[in-house]
Image 1 (cartoon, rainbow, N blue to C red):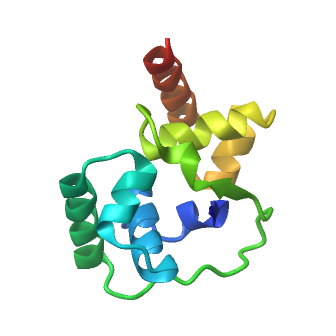
Image 2 (tube, rainbow, N blue to C red):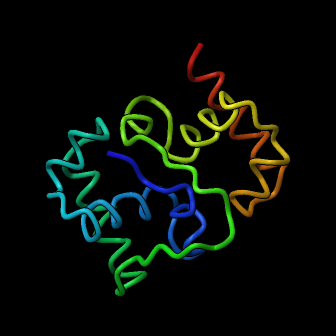
Amino acid sequence: MKVPLSLFVFDKKLGPAELLVKYLKENVGLRIGEIAELLGRKHCTISITYRNASRKKKAKIEIKDIGKEKIMLPISLFAGKLSVLESLIENLKERGMKNIEIAKLLERDPRNIMTLDTRAREKLK
């Protein structure tokens, strides 16, 4: 199972984990327990994340072509010690992208990308 990279620039009100969980629950149709298992997180964590996302954004996530590359990311990428955004950045770095390119794709400040990349590398040591 894969999710589109454009999911993570869908809405600035929701964080990356909230976007991912809401998308998997509402668009893909997975149950909270299934999402928790796929992401290697606790059931209560996913439940709270979904509740918070639903309160912030009532409407279903609609992924539209926003002119970005159609990069699809495997769900397994988000399982592990890293946060959703750290995992995403590490994956894009492994694909040979530079911080500035990742920042443009994710519509974030390049300094934030650098910080998250450094934090992820420290966690993986």
